[in-house]
Image 1 (cartoon, rainbow, N blue to C red):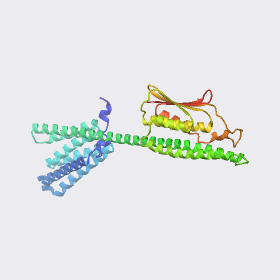
Image 2 (image 1 turned 135 degrees about the vertical axis):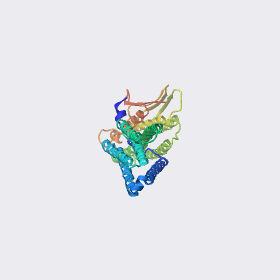
Image 3 (image 1 turned 135 degrees about the horizontal axis):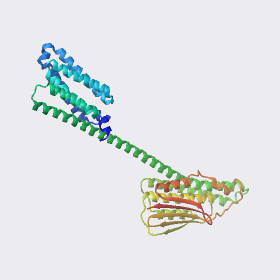
Image 4 (image 1 turned 180 degrees about the vertical axis):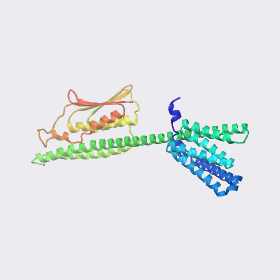
Length: 396
């Protein structure tokens, strides 16, 4: 048996009332009130105190109750020597009661000392204190040996049961506290995850829409800036403005889709990719046996496709794009591959389309990679033979 079994204090939860329900607290208060009232009545009804005066009896009982209250406070703070000192004073008070001829108050104090010492002290101190209290009662009691033995055994069992009960309540309170802390941490983690999810949704929708508008508006600005004859470039400028307007409408649709995704209402991935690739003049290929995807996996495929096509539009305008969705046995793969860019306006330096790719915050690939890692998947991106490729793999 480990040494801590004998030297360890009962837990603070066991020694306090935190582990008790409100009903149990009121029952405990009622029992203590009855015990105090019985002690007072026994002291006042005893012939010895009637001879010496009721005031002395009341004062002696008050001192014992004060010592008992101090014992409860010191044991709650795990202060061993002060608690043992107060318990010794209680034992002295019991002997004083007995010497004065008040056997009932003496018996009550000895019994209470035995029970509270067993219930609130480390076992290495509780057992000797309980034995001393019960031995003092047995040596001074005028009752027969059978009655004394039954009383001693009953008080010893009562003290041990009190200790077990308080420890059980303390363990229950400790487990409840740990469970509440775990639930709070889980709620905070879920809140952080939801904030991250909403942040990615806002970024993906706004980046896809606003960066595309920026590209078209910047191209229109460049045409206006470079052209001396605005009428000659009117058609191109109009096309750019119309395209920017279309991107704004697409952004509004994307916002609605993001809100639907947050509510768990999403269309099939193939339908979304078909609509997206048609708007971007890209080719879509779907291979493998189609299956239903989880909302998280479907959302990741949608957002990665959007971000990859946005990057193509920003960094390689005019490139041929192929979007391939492949259903494998244990995963689904999305590949967005583009050929080399076909520049309409060239000239290196500021104010050309060569620097349009500098627009954006640079968080696109980071957000896509975060989505993949949260789902246990992978995301790879880099130059290909004729252009650039983004490849996403997520488990199904």
